[in-house]
Image: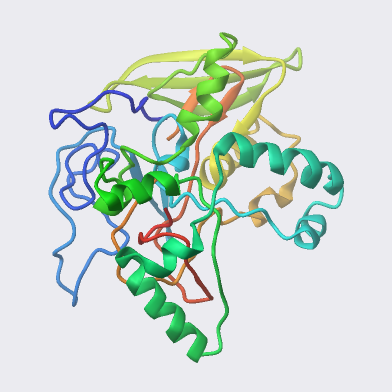
Length: 329
């Protein structure tokens, strides 16, 4: 639903700084809504901004709020970049009809290769000043009887080391995270989507919001989408028809589209259970003070894509450190 983030702003960077956000930070807001919004109950974190189709949105519900990425690349633009392969027994339990041997032998390794998944050099972790607070937290976790582990990531740790050495422009080590990373992160717009566009067989339509999905009399699917401009005004309403429709609008977006279609009767065959199984699609960490780092949504003919990630929940279920940033890169 957002824009293609490839054009520098007035400051020469594509994404704004986490510490000095401007209109590029939030999706049509007049003030930022950072996950950590206050310090000692004082509103000193958020900033007033001009409404614009920025990269981060916060969708509010009665019982929760969910952070989502807006732009080509989805939540990969604004999340922490953690790339964890699920434990095989858990995967098989949740997806018993999927061939786990094929997933773990072919598809997970392929995805890790395309995304450039890597882990931090343990020796550098132990020696660099940037991870001093992470090491302190690791010690505290051990004293509390908690285990820690390094988490694979799509942020290029070799680039991060060059940032620390002063030979590369800082991104992770400059606190970039929830409003996008200008360097170092292999988000989907730079990997899978770039490769797809390179085939010449894929078209991505930006700044379009699908508001209806219906089944036509001939069995095909019809999507109704509104195209907006940078002020948020609807400038065109379009329809797309397709034989096969893949929804990848994240937990919030996909659920919203399917529930609306079921309740309005445009997809009457949807099962009633659809409303009971919303996945979280978030990254959860307990972490010490560190610079923040980061990494939505596009609508395509035959494919609605939106990466959604909840960035706000910071529960201390276990300590996982693989980077010197507060959001995972």
